[in-house]
Length: 87
Image (tube, rainbow, N blue to C red; front, side, top):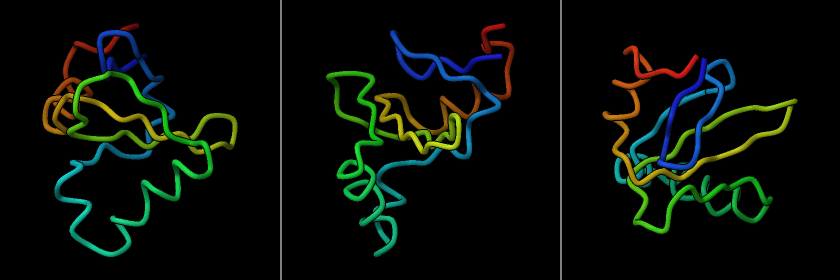
């Protein structure tokens, strides 16, 4: 099953580690350093030209990938729980 995180991007649900709100997670020091470090390591995938509101952390073949999404974390979490998953 897949979770649609943007109009052009879907991710396998079994690869998802977490769905995070961008504003809430950048409050702590660890949260502020996570995304710049992931971007420096080449792990960030931009899914839209719009302002990101959340990010989805996945592991694919042992590699960390961070997808930035213009959808809120609440929308993505609701999709993950609903039948909007793509089979």
